[in-house]
Length: 435
Image 1 (cartoon, rainbow, N blue to C red):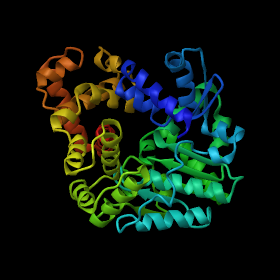
Image 2: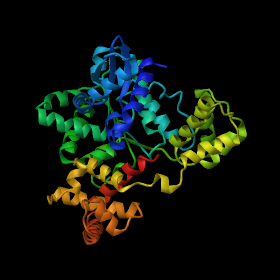
Image 3: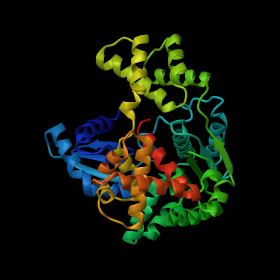
Image 4: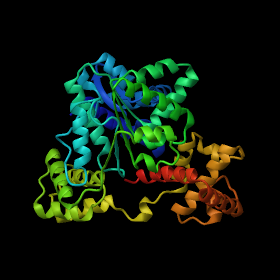
């Protein structure tokens, strides 16, 4: 284990009580600790935007946690993956993702086409299936394949400049570049790379400036025969808010769907994960997990990790009772895992780039009002709160305001498919917090 990774895990536990779940997920989910040398902890994050936010808002908190761990003053250095590629060996590309290789990807009927297409692209980038568009529900292995492609290409073409980013991070980075007058730097980064990978590309849909930038980025890369890979939760033709020009381009290469794993593949995934973490599961327990966790690879991995934790941390032997307990933890009662109004408000605000206090305030601007109406609608749909209770959650408004907002959204959705897509995206973000 990388010592820096251990230290970062401890830091996350120390600072977690001081931040909301949304803050942790937004700014720290994809941060990796890559080096601990002397009195300096080095962190890597995918984008300039996230780097700047972490440096400006959170380094004092991280330094405080470091002091608590080491009883000494320590420094924190935050870099983007691109900066790390320029300053460190290629082997440090996408730090913390080394286990996401083709060798570790379990192939079955549900994913073998996507895996074969990904391997073909990795072995012959820019010439096979450009763009490659991998789609499927959350937790099925799309990101694993993107990382596997990137690592394979790095090994075969050490000089390649490879850029990986999530759709929402691309938008945030573009906003920062425009605000700070760094458009040329932004375009150089993305339009002159040798391979471009974007995870969750559905999040750029409906964002005009982002789509315009992506249109030109795509054209530049495609004309130079640079490999482009996207992942999404749905195929391009189902992204109703996506610009027609982009929908055509995204569909022009090879679409590859990943479905939920069948029983045999689930057994193989569980066995592979267990072997990797050093857990021996007899056949009857492998089958027990495979029979009960049927749709999400991430939940399968989480169950195996819990079994390992029971064994290592609590000295519990692996038995049917241990496995049932681990699965129960993965499937808590709906009352324990259902979204709250606060979570829904946080996710709606994150989508619209607003602060929750603004949503709960008296602002009546078009964006604020629509955001508030969407949040009330989703709160009514995803919680058991009454109209009066919903009004109180939104700055002490009355039940008629909540009812009016819900009716407005219902009308909007009927006449505007784009609003339906927005609700679908926000709902997916909310549900993803309980995967």
